Length: 328
Image (cartoon, rainbow, N blue to C red; front, side, top):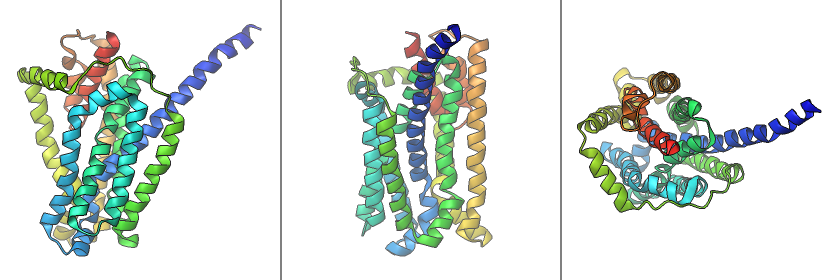
């Protein structure tokens, strides 16, 4: 009888854990697709220039349109996730990303390309914030760093696919067919996420965009925050130029090899980032166990450790934010 009672007690917990991992998987797949969309121009640039009879300026416009939308949506992303919840924001994000990807594949001119990529970016910009909030809601504090690192890895999986595999697919099927296929994958994941994600609880958030802007101004008043921001910005500018736009064309031109072969060094770069994300997520959890930072200096603990890891700087910022919220 006692054993039956224990099994009954563990069953709901096990089902809850399974549901949490399924929900995480749905949003992680969305983040992988978002990361793929971000760095895909390097794999399609040569075909893109040929089809639209354009030059490097046209490819630069293709890449910049994504970052314009992504940057602008970073400002209200946290407010939207807090106010409307993970499920509604993620579903809206997936719809925008999938429809934008299909529009990009069917675009007849550069203006339509710019608009389609802008729509994709506005959707993709919300995913990572929602993913880390889901991790904070669904997993224990001692697993937050590890799950955040693995969540970052899901993005690099998309980055890996955007290198050699996407370059090979573009060579075989054309870039338009590839992005139509990506849109179909996004819609299939949308159906999966609608089933896997729990309904969002009633929000009691009173955050506004004005409050976010004021908080940002206060943060910018601290010199240490400028250091983290400039470290991330300087890295992101260089790495995005190579891994997101010009990496494959440059390697292919310089070494006189095919775009598929040129994707191999970028593939290695993405794998290195993925391994680093897991390692640093684990290290952040261990650091949090050894040194319990005060609420006034969380960046001195796990945040500063992650800040050294390129894109993980942004993950660290969210880790600090969500951990402080859960501690309140």
